Length: 498
Image 1 (tube, one colour):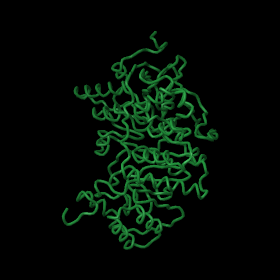
Image 2 (tube, one colour):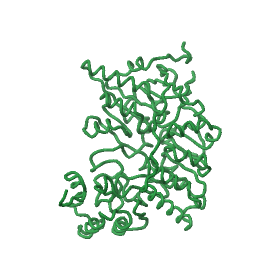
Image 3 (cartoon, one colour):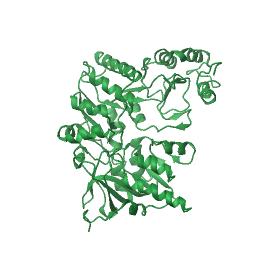
Image 4 (spheres, helix red, strand yellow):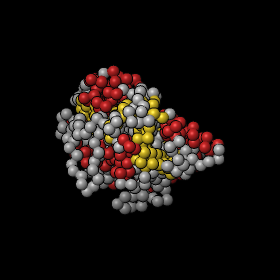
């Protein structure tokens, strides 16, 4: 018997011997929040040693979304990953995916738990899940994210629990774990407010599947976002002005609707601007991650409460929450990702979705994930689920990148994550295009006039004037000219001097 009751205590190195070449391994974590750390670090070292000996050692990797450095970077650098889903954010892994060395399945995050539960990915050989405690009867108290961990605990053949002593046991006070039954025996999910709790503060596992406990003392490694720059602040100003106009027009209630925000500096700038504006009333959020700006809004009383699946916050903000857990715990609900991103709940609550785009075409189709339509950056994440099912769908992006060499508004997106039927509002620092009720040509003119950078407006105007007439005008010989220029010359609008 160990100090963990019936469960054996293993070192991280011992745990890696339970993982074989070709195994499918599921790790906890939604972003770096709550990601397994000790076992993947040791696994990377083991993989390097196996490769040095001339042996094959590659595994299939699942997490909740993107994951921490130990998974998306160390395992990739050790060339251990053969297949990855549902999302990633590591530089080394991204390069391997784009070289076709790793098979990457990019998917909607709320679809992942059902896909695993129904066996579409085959068997899950092992799950490695971070927790603050595992009880002898199989109750598992997770740390800073819920993600897909409850599903992995139920459906993996074997389980290793990483007990992280750095994480506060009181994080469980924010957890609300609820697992949906399989179709066709589902019933309405009784969430009628972002703070509604319907589950338990713990996930469960069959104790007979737990092959060991690995101890850890490593914090989540999430850096603070940079302060908003001038472009982000301009975008934020347009979004706030739009929401206020919608409120005055009676299209959203006086106390607003629940908001969702994607991850990044632009989203943080929008949240900060909402918190500072005196005409924006206190509001709630139904989102997939809690970010630094949201902690400040909660502390100031501008954010009444927030639902998410992970605390994607810096160490300083996590300490702020833990040090004042009596205040924050009733105001934060952490759910499994199939609930935090569930289309039906998003639609029922009337969520206003605010996500970032890589580029958009003149008709409002949005690419969030692939440069040139070929090289993946991260993936679709949860943006598609919120965009398609929200009350109002907003996409935000700077109008240009790389000192103006790249336009975010193009004739046609070579890859589309959220199509024109889901995108209602498009915002750059240049302005805001309200696309509701507009036909294709009206959309094109509105986007060019209000969102495109002045350096690209003449080109885009000329493109839609000269394109072949149809319900949607396009010139199939020129629609990707800007992208071809970028590949050939390093800029979308080359000049004689370049």
